Image (cartoon, rainbow, N blue to C red; front, side, top):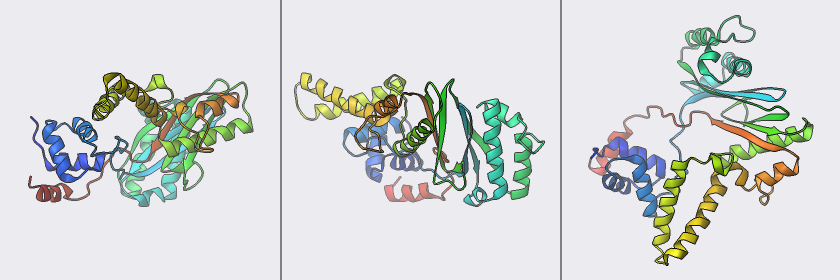
Length: 302
């Protein structure tokens, strides 16, 4: 059985919001496995429905670039928020997004591409910026979406300047032709995705392992009601449908009116939503925040 360390308690506490001693007990019961401990806490009603991701602390910028029937999005990380306000860094992120639009989302291909207007590769220009600004930087990820006909719209939440910010979204809508109305719809889809954080486009795209875990938790919760198995099965099916409405973009309620389904809104406009992605700066990356694990150890008696 894995040792229940202060670091594990800290990770579980940040992931679930549960109390320190509850997290310690959950990890003990789960053999030190954080994901199993999350399920244990949920079954006991001590954690939220696994909606929290890790604390977001990395800095830098998300940048987008668009062309007819295509758009690209990149995330470039730096050490401090100060760099994100640097005009040279902002111009670099814009250039990298444009390069991705040309060469695709493979990171090595982007690093080897010539940065527009510089005469240098993306990797060479990043090395120069690191030396000039004095902070480490990295190209973390990229996404490119294309359609044969229609639009790929982009949305950047709370943009520092056009196409640059901390949350970016791409939304691809296939349609017979491009139009201002379709572009507006794509932007509205982007705003919706930024707010609701879906993880799949349609039900078929839901991660099978995530669905299996969710169903297992729902079964345990339903059994606690003491109802017959036939009733429990119906309860679980209903809650699975609710789960789809939370994580599947096309099944979600349209945030702009609070009533319609996203799929109905897009169909009414004569389009088909074929893809999306959402980048939030630094999600899943954690910076050193001091000896918080030591503080947890002292309080928990580890």
